[in-house]
Image (cartoon, rainbow over all chains, first blue to last red; front, side):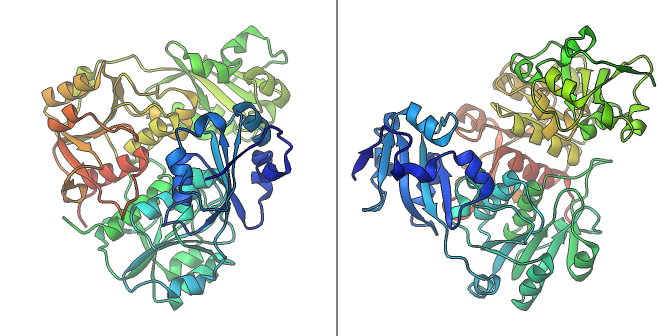
Length: 268
Length: 268
């Protein structure tokens, strides 16, 4: 492992890390920033679908993370900088002290992702989930319950946004995903691939609790506010989670975990 | 409803709202700040355990929220200010445009809270949950599944922190709570009140999925990192949620929802 020391925040070698908060808002073609030790461990693991392009680390973290740094592929540069230089590069105090620049997986069509899945598979399908914490939470739960993929429509946030990756505890980097041009196209593709689409909705009559694991199922989640459109609910099986008196509803990431739990855990 | 207009950010009548972000860090004896329409609606509802002391609103929100403002008790002042004055009072751009100062419920002992509960009751017991989003999430889930109380040990964050209340969607203001001097005291009190303490732990053998609703149960949750101490796990029933290959664990708020779901929803 060769570590290159950098003293100048304007060094061209670390240009991709500059002002990452502002760049988060504009997106970056094909690349993402991984933040913190846990996420980096996923990026460098065999389970990762992504490749690291470089690593940027506070010099005082190098000794503590030497084991992890030794798993960085040969030829991938590791840049060490002082904490003050690091903070100036990224534009805010970066307590986690380690970042990596990664390459997103090659984009695959929804049909291609679905075609690869086994006969027993649960996928998460999300519509209009803009909040980055929620997208990250969906991925974290999907990985925890062994969902085969997370599928999004055109109104979901980018899972490769830095905060989404962090909230997902790295799951975004290891769980196959695909984006559909619309919610309708997402449901069409799932049905064409013989997935039973199960929409979670507070207004549903059938309780989630009645479902049993098995087969090809897609758990469809809409935004917390308006929820899924009636036209989509009309063509899908719709299940709900009865709530205690008058309380509005659950967070969408929590709801995804409940659906995945019900669809993947065998009755004891 | 009488609305008092304020033009001076230093007006003594709104001193409690000044620089709320810094005050969040120091706490405030017996009072809290409620933020946003949804939380305020809970504070002003019959379900609330707390009383409003005043309301501070951006003048351009008054018409849209007139119905809500009419539920403010007589004698509780409503202060209207320009958005720019509001931002200067609170110390940052307050897009939600409405705040209230509330009085916490009178602190009750753990034993007193537990003594009031019926024979069929589920409570959430939390140890070392410092993160304000997670505390808020616990309350939101507790309210959604009709848990009778949320009990915390001495190492949990204050549920009445502004962000916790907001994440709870107001549930902190309507769900009974009590703080124990230690985790051991919390478990002691639960056992003395004939609650079965069910600890959720990734290392447990017994699956959560095997539990059925009924009786007095306490769902005990520890921090995401170290988890519950072995001494506590040894004296409680310990259940887990089997996770897919190698993935670490779920967020504690998500875990609480899964436990509550299992302990409150009848098998369909």
